[in-house]
Length: 213
Image (cartoon, rainbow, N blue to C red; front, side):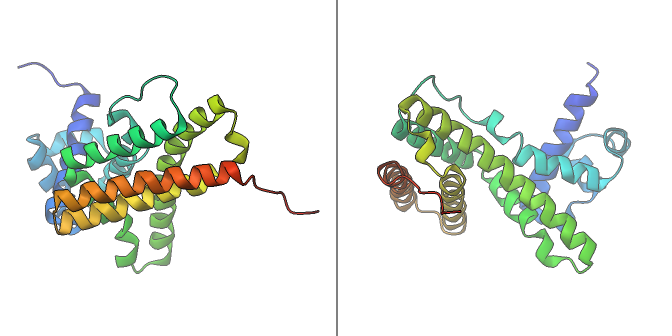
């Protein structure tokens, strides 16, 4: 049998943890259950990760910092409208192909609401901010690149636009996962794309003014 590298085994445990959390909830995601889901010895999990918290941190990273790597590649130079369409739709294709990842993301983000210890709550919220920060950074970079090619980047509030995209995807995901309706979902994704493009063009046509000192 071929030897599995630590990197590959770690990835197997991270993906297994995401599946267990989505299917059974955070409380059920013990190291023993995750190892069983990965089809690997518990000792191998503890060799890859010092403890469950370290593994969960990597699940956070897998679903945020590393998420963009799992999306369909974006093409070269493109219009801003095209960048919006392609980016939102490739995120949605990923959600449809791996819906458990979105469920796990919701579970992790809401974890802080079930905690009692103030330090644990603060730590969980810090991780939540880092997850959103990664999504915002990757989305902003795509829109900024397209806007710079148009010479319009100076007029756009990329943080707000990116947060709107993420909020829209989260809301549509929640509706789709809880009450699947492909026709309705397609309309909502179309509407999200149109809304984001409208906001971008509104900002381009109405440049922001800096407050007086």
